[in-house]
Amino acid sequence: MRKYVSRSSSETEELGRRIAGDLEEPCVILLTGPLGSGKTTLARGIALGLGLADSTLVHSPSFALVNIYQGRCRIYHVDLYRVDGDRDLRSVGLEDFCGRDGITVIEWGERLPGAVEAVLRVEIRVLDDDLREIITNSRKAPASPRNAP
Image (cartoon, rainbow, N blue to C red):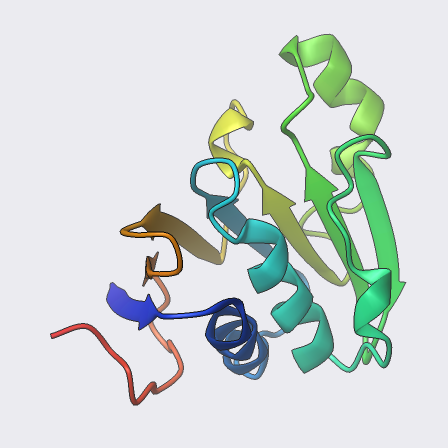
């Protein structure tokens, strides 16, 4: 487990880029944290770190549920915020790609019932308006000059 402190959205995005450097496909990343904590910002950094050229493409897929981007591999960006129960979850079609193809980044990962084997679990805690503590369970977490003590 590693802890990082982010003082801005740009630092959160940069951490996402570094996380992406250690990922091998297929891979599942579960992001947890309260509304507005920076899950989409971290997902944007991961996508950019995986070679996505246009950062404006990455936005929360709350209504679409899944956005697909192409970098050095296919990137599935899933948002489970509006998913209500197993029926809604089945409509997302996670079983078609999750852990089978590319990199899957799931926001609101705590809403995912059952056993999805995540390679990386990331919890974002809001400490203040711009201050976040980001906790990963990665064995190969990226080095950061701003690691929490």
